[in-house]
Image (cartoon, rainbow, N blue to C red; front, top):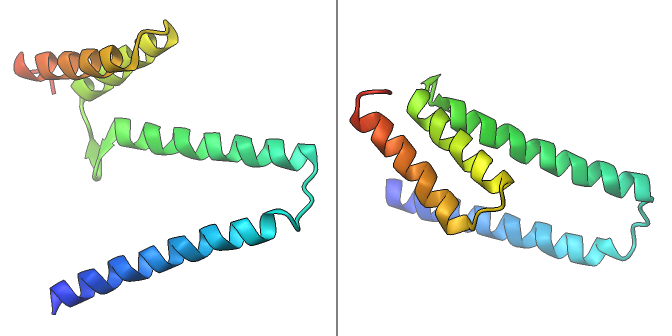
Length: 106
């Protein structure tokens, strides 16, 4: 029974995603949005992404994620700000987090 529910849930999410994309394609040319509305929608998407990133950085479930993860994210932010290539940003953040956890900082 759980496998059937899982597959059904995946199918339902896939169908919903497809319907939303199709509706956006069909309605996109019919809706005339002002420039201000477009800017507000763009800003809303950025705020949502930042909120998700901050939550994932600071919390692991209900508990604080630890200083090691926070340090890794801060290193990644600094390197991204300095326009370091993405692969180096990812590797550096992972190394900082792993080294801090290795020495006992959680």
